[in-house]
Structures are given as structure tokens and as C-alpha cells.
Amino acid sequence: MEPRVSPIKLFSGTASNYLAESIVKSYGTELGKTQILRFSDGEFQPSYLESVRGCTVFIVQSTFPPSDNLFELLLLIDAAKRASAKTVVAVIPYFGMARQDRKDRPRAAIGAKLVANLLTASHVDRIMTMDLHADQLQGFFDVPVDHLYASPIFVPYLESLNLDNLVVAAPDMGGSKRANAYSRFLKSEMVICYKNRKKANAIDEFKVIGDVKGKNVVIVDDMIDTAGTITVAADTMLNEGALSVRVIASHPVLSGPAYDRIEKSGITELIVTDTIPLKQQSSKIRVLSIAGLFADTIKKVYTYQSISTNFIV
Image (cartoon, rainbow, N blue to C red; front, side, top):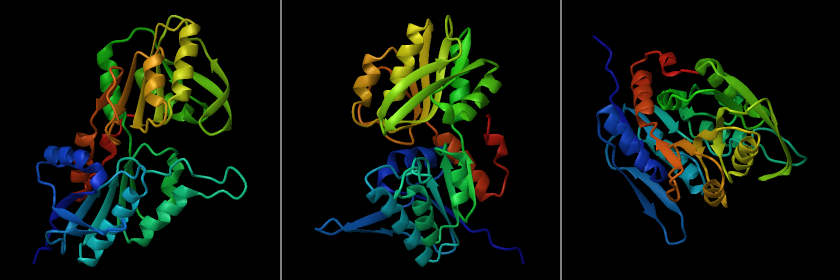
């Protein structure tokens, strides 16, 4: 007797419903139905409106603020496990708290590890995410992690621009590995930005290490929050003779003065993905969808195929 293959079902949390709809469309299926019971004091209880018994369940939810988004994901995982789902995979395009990956000051929390522990405690079977702030965050989990990169989306777009004298830039020393990977693939030169901070979201010193004169620069980063670093970097490079400065970043956090800074800066174009919805539109911001990439990866994970072909850099 042949073993039964568990049916696949895809669901979404509230915050990522827009993205989940695109993922299931690309996958060729429909989004599963859920509901959220909300109490007058703000407490909420998600539940499924269809059976998940024996199913492989994928739950799409980025965990950007507010923290309700993370807790809703945890409750959806718990509900699926209690409803006898065979396997539960948390699809977290943007993994919140990722910047809290170490104890960088006395008496500080390591938020990324705590979130990993909470997901493990919910008995999730697998994590699927993209462009973590640091690759080593995968080691915080005791379950398999499929760590995708946005490079299969960004690289073809950059190649379509046919930029001459291309230079890839790392916005800081920590981003040099990511920028170097793009530089090697695009066969371009690379420069590194040095910045010194005394507190979060504030730059005290900034320098560009390398030659950008007469170059079209592409700054590569994993996320953009207040846009302080990239706008200072772009204006500094233009002052040093760069022909143009573009920025690619997977996660458009874009909080506080970010939109205003981007509009006033010399940045030609900011290219991001839809892991986080934009709070407002901007003529300088181009959004590329990662729905197809996640749909293909979900299909390969479900059918036990290799996902290594989904990586460019």
C-alpha cells in the first residue's frame, strides 16, 4: 500500500495577506480561510475555517511591528498543531527582531533568539524566511530553516538597466559579505562605506573606502529603516563624483523620516521587495515582488526537491 501524501494548504496572517494572495496565485491554488475573534480589550484568537488534519500547512506572516503580527503567527501555528496538521511551516518573509542578534551592551535582550525560542515552543516544524540581518541567525533555531535571498529578483533587474562602470557598495562593514557576493556575480568593482554610530539610527562619522568617481553605484543592504545611512552614503558618493546611486534592499522598513530623506536625497532609485507593505508611495521607490520566488520554494519544499537552484548569489 502506497503511503498517503499529505495535502498542502496555504494560509496567511493579517499583516501579510496581500503577499500571501500573490503567492497562492503564483502557486496555482487558493488561500485557506481563517478568522480572528477579537475581544473588546484587544485580545484576539485566530482559528481555521476548514480542516487541516493531516495536511502540510504553510502560514505566511512577516513579523514587523506591532508585535501582534508575531503573536498572531504563533497562535496560528498553535491552532494548526492542535487541529492535527501533519507539518506546519512558518513562512516569514521579513523576520522581525533580527537586529537584536547579540548582546551588544550590558543588560540588553537578544530579541532574535527569544523569537526563535517562541517559534520553537509553538512546535513549528520548519521556518522559511528571506535575507536575515545576519546569516548566523539560522543557528538560533532547532528546526530546519530555508533562508532565501532576494538576489534572484534583484540581479535580473540590475542587469536589465545595462549600467556601465557599475560599482557595488556595502553600506557598512557588516554588509561587505552580501555586497561582495553581488560584486562577484555582476563582475563589478566594490567599495565599502565606513560609519560610526554612538546610538541607534544616528551616524557620527561616514567615509567611502574605494573609488566611485565616474561610476554608477548600487548600494546593497538587507533592510532600510530610517534611511539615514543610505541617503548619507548616496550624497557622499555623488559628491565624490559618482554618476548615479541606486539602492537595493530586501525589506522596506522605512520608518520615521525615511520617505522624506529618500525624496530629498540624490538617490536615483530605491529598489525593494514586498516583504513589508509600503506606508506611502514614492516616485523613487520601485517594488519587486518575491511572491513567485516563495511560491516556487514552497512547492519544492512540499515535494522534497532541492531549493539550491533558487539561489543566485
